[in-house]
Length: 454
Image 1 (cartoon, rainbow, N blue to C red):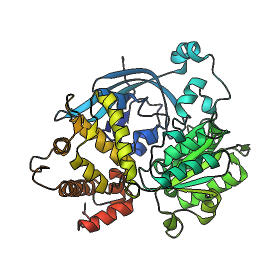
Image 2: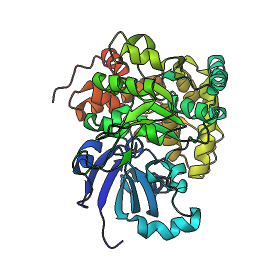
Image 3: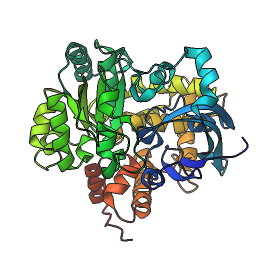
Image 4: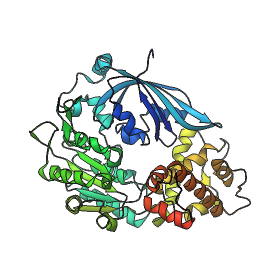
């Protein structure tokens, strides 16, 4: 790589810590708006499986990738050559850094022509068919939902039943319960499965860009504006998943309602109404009875989108799923880390069944993944020793304290650190910990934590 156009740094959780773009053609607003957000939310065609940043952390080595398609919040397609390498501290992977160089369509044309032929002009946002699958594909089916809990089984059966309709769906559930997994599964069980599936986290979109991202722009409508399809146009015939809908400003929710009801959108700078056929699946981590009473979502928009309601129970209310999920994650990370774990010690199993898992299935997976990083290849049982290493504590031992006490001590430590990082902002601290704000407030009361002032 003879020069670079940008540098991006993420932490182990995928949060963008730093980004700088040297190419003058790149809008500087992007740099200002994406720091602190999740990489997979900002670049919504990127997944853990196709990201060179995630791959270099997983394999603990430098990764070079050519012709990587990225789509950001501005609904712009960019092709880059990347070099990514992991960042270590104390022998542990704590993040990754990526150097990127933008390459033109012409530079990539020969390769694309060989693989997929010439560009399909009807593809959303001028993407080639090969690229379309990367950005707009639902990767999971309802069969991928792992559960033994009766209520979860009934939800999966219900999801199969309503998948064939085109009615809007409103999914509620705490962070980490699998709302997008259900949305993708419903899409793939529907007649729309061969059409685009687009997931958009509403909290990741700067307010001044929401209209251009959702409805599109026409060339010349403002300085630097190009002819770009919005999400509704790009998703024509498919499914649009709007996560964290409650984060969209109320005044913009009214415009969203009009577009949904008319099934047409007008690009910024145009008078023409463009028709589309899109199924909407919305989601929020706000409790059902708080959505309207606390004014998070307009009543009329909520009633329009909640024709079908799905409420996913938290992991603490379906403890019978913990064992089967743990087994699945152990098998998954055995392959990734080349380990041979077959079971969990009774001590850790007992903790897992009594812990309340505020981060739900996502937290459980992170717990298993982190613990298995410390297991030697000759071990077959995940034990308390790994827990001590996991939290890097010299003065805490599972042999001298009850496991519940150890975890409470560590939880208190993490809560304080998050509040310090966020300078006492409870909302930002909750986002950093990936738990609902209400859960953080409850834990602050439990541990008698006063608001930390900046």
